[in-house]
Image (cartoon, rainbow, N blue to C red; front, side, top):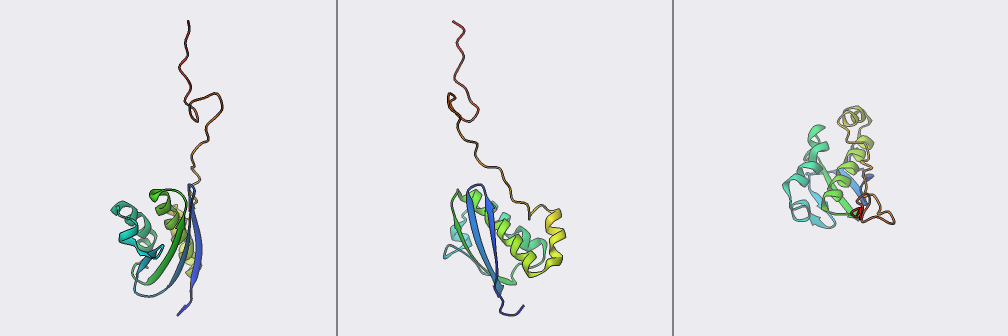
Length: 130
């Protein structure tokens, strides 16, 4: 485990996060910026560190992340998914607790496309009787 680099990919909506973890002091860098700078909202940072706190690995790994696509919230979800997958790669015993917490499940909810003849995905134009 010493000096090894673990890699995983996480996805959410249209965001894709590539996560690299190596044993270290617990620094998290997202797109070459500190996590506090990239994810300004506290809720996003809590979401990202959730799998690390749950498995008592918070502060034990240096994490480098590149994330593309989607918005900030989707990117945070993708990073959480990637970190969870990397933890399973590090220690396969963590699979069951992470799976029970639904951290390994890829959240497949994406925006529904607009349909022709309608105003949106499901919203219709107002019906006029006369």
